[in-house]
Image (cartoon, rainbow, N blue to C red; front, side):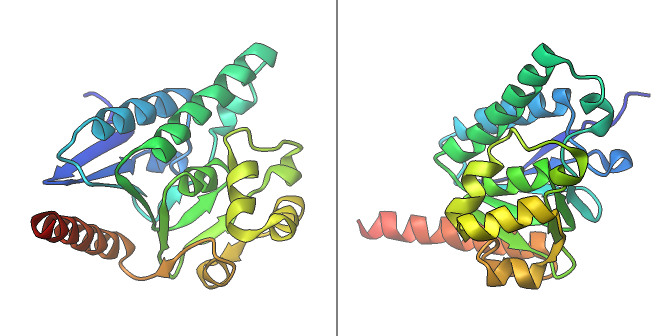
Length: 208
């Protein structure tokens, strides 16, 4: 039996849900998944019929960041390639003409947080948590979080979160501007928001 796909795209009219589907590894992102994520987003972004891309995770996990088992094996050249794969995947999200929403349904850690930061909007469940643990591992993210996070919450707060590697809950994430809404079930709320956004566009287009 073939393994289940680790990146799943589900289309519902003008809305596409892209799901990180690696629950056995806490939705950790390996090199192959980053490549598949980039291809999925790039393909959807070319579809003029798609108005919203929603990114979420399987089960009760959004994404736990880079796959640690791969990180341990990286050398100088392979580390650079791994960083560039993540940068390409997340930049494809940031560059998409469609509205992009991260429906953060659980733990959002390390590179998973970088993924959420690449989206235009971030909605979180009440049980979602956020953390950048690099300081405890002796590494720093190479996937754009160091640039995108301070734009949202400011340099001082970003530095505090990076250097302490502490976990914050969805309430604090909302208070500091990391997420824009806290709602359960978060994916349902994101899809409702997406439908309203698409419908408003149709009405505005008709009036224009």
